[in-house]
Amino acid sequence: MQAQSIDALIAYWQSKCGDTGIPDRADIDPTEIPRLLQDIIILERTDDANLRVRLAGTNVVSCLDYDPTGQVFDRNMVAKGVQALIQHCGDAANLRKPQRHVIDNFGLRRAYNEVELAILPLRRNGDDVVMFLVGAQFRVSSERNKQELVPRIGEKRGNGWHGNVVC
Image 1 (cartoon, rainbow, N blue to C red):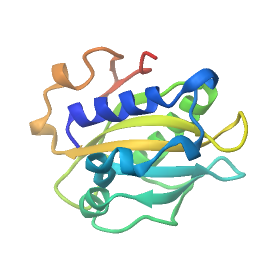
Image 2: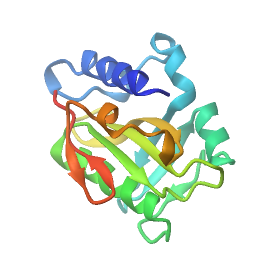
Image 3: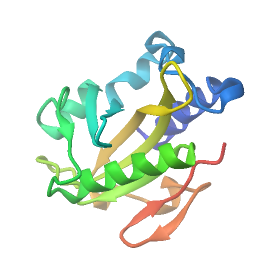
């Protein structure tokens, strides 16, 4: 997924927001975004605020070197990238707004050492945020041009770009 694809996923999510400001999971139709599916992750919040991977696209599986579908990302996991992902999903749920972040040293098994994420909150049969549609772009740091990554949102903090997507 290129930055333009992340932009396309955000635009698709925004088109599904309707009056509630956050689309329901049922509003997301994979047939409408076939070119983006390989780079998508669908996460579900568990009762203890951890994240279960409901779906991982083929490119995500390839970049991670394993299929995380069904895995629970626990707050007690050592990997800083997983902890950051849980935190950013929590922010998206609490703020009820999408988030866009670059996480360095994600703990990937292959040559990729950073991931750009668009974390888009979803409802399911109600008002509470219970799921996240995540677009992921994996890359090595030397390929990154930070000026192109998050030109409209966010600021440089620490070792990555952070911020809210403007809705």
